Length: 448
Image (cartoon, rainbow, N blue to C red; front, side, top):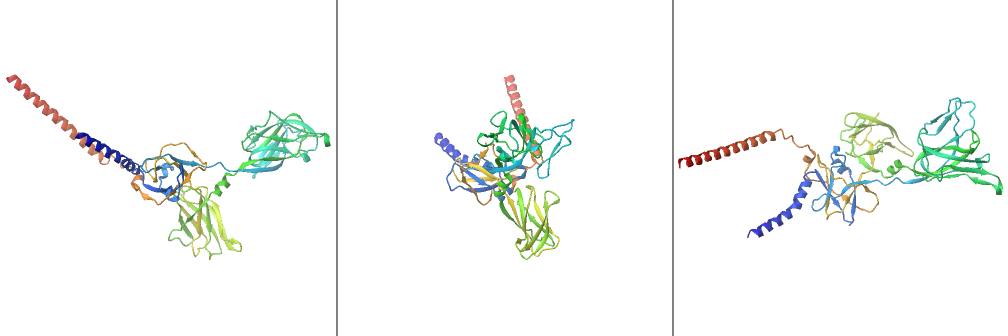
């Protein structure tokens, strides 16, 4: 009759194991967010909300999050790598700038202007014939071709060049093209004309500045004689792509703000890119000083002159330089306003992916002092996923999961020593009892 009891206990234990696993996992995290995954899919994207970010341990760097399935088991979950920035076509017409050759040990200086344009100054009176020319693409581009403008070529020529690229005019690197050198030719007129004025590139590297160096042949392309060229390629604008994904949050003013100082609590853990400040409708003009508080003091980051007049709506936007740790924003006006300015903050929410491993419902657990999710390969944005919409936050283990465990030395150490001492006394008592019993048996044997 024992076997059925053993089987029954095994079945009960098997049923309780998932519940125990769920309890253990949830006990490590402060909060839980139910995830709406009504559309069947193999993987789901979660766009983190300010509420989720505010639930995390700032020291964990967003690693104190897991997704669990209906059985309470954590499943593959990690950040979604952003897509490559969109490529934009770029063309730039530029003149070849001759680099003066060295003369008597003195070389011309090559510098960049504040806008990045090239400045070449020669310290030589007799510069001689240049053998190097610089081109400015106007921005960092992946160059496809350089085409010499035939109308700007003043003499026939036949020569071979090498091409290098640079980001700072100081450090140069080779550029990939069809052969070791590039042959350019302009000979003859009319039907007998031979013309090859295009350099094609195979490289996907980016650079703003390009240098042509004469390797064979002869050209007279000094100042005033150098031809112009059309540079064609592609560029990435990561800043513009990020701006295109901005989301705007309304930031509420703190009660009691008045007399020219208006304080706003910023959403915790959110990387802010910009803030937009707008005067209340009944204000015509004001100078607004924007200050941000981190852990300690307030620092001014901008001064905005806002005007309600004509086509001006009393609104301005300033970059926020990604003040992730900012806790409070203060707007100070030289004259008090009847109402607080309206503030909105721009940010790009972090995105995560989890695999549909096991059955729904799925939950996101967030916020822990010590628990961290496992390492998974990076998830790349292929668009092959459905959306998992986070619901309202509910307590898992609560705030205690975010707190460091109590120091066991405060009360557990004396208890431990008491248990050890009691155990030692018990062992000594048992040994003494066995020793006395052994002596009595020896006395009985000797009497017999």
